[in-house]
Amino acid sequence: MTNPTASPSPPSASTSPRRWSWGAVLVVAGVVFLLVLVGFQLVRTQRGVQVGDRVPEDLTLTTYYGETYRLGDLRGKVVFINFWASWCKPCEEEAPFLQEAWERLEGRGDVIFLGVAWTDTDAKARAYLERFNVTYPNGPDLGTRWAQVFRIRGVPETYILDRDGRLAYIKIGPFVSTQEILDAVYQVLGEQ
Image 1: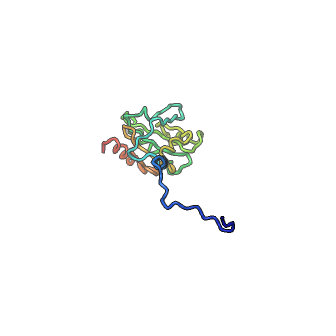
Image 2 (image 1 turned 90 degrees about the vertical axis):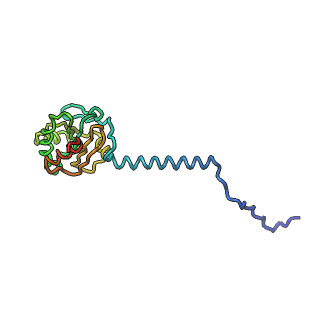
Image 3 (image 1 turned 180 degrees about the vertical axis):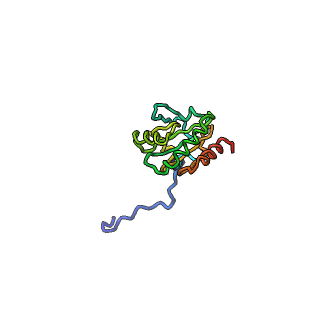
């Protein structure tokens, strides 16, 4: 006969630790691997291209005059990319130096300058280009695609690509002389 007032005994707890199956271990390892991979991609995207990185060939700039430049089509040339804005005072200071450097390098055929107007209106950007007699190709950064690739922090900023489309030089802030620009370009050309 059983005693109705006696409390039932607790279920016996297993004293052996729970073991994971190989399938569960593989699933967890796979998830951790994917998270690490995604994390590295996010960090890389956040930092933008770095010196030595190949710049996406599909970056395209349509100038204020309707010309289109695609980076992949410029292979074999040194590409000088300058981010600027009409409202930027340091950009105004470097504009004459950029134009003079372009005039000195344009005839070579192995260097091209591209000006990328960042967060600017067409009318003000065009007035800026006219004011400083800028003759090298310039266009707006529609959709901020260029700014995202290079992760610019402000203007002016300049990036120079080597003949293979790799980032070879970065200048944050304005150039202070034509010679400083020429020295940077000659360095990438391997002529210094």
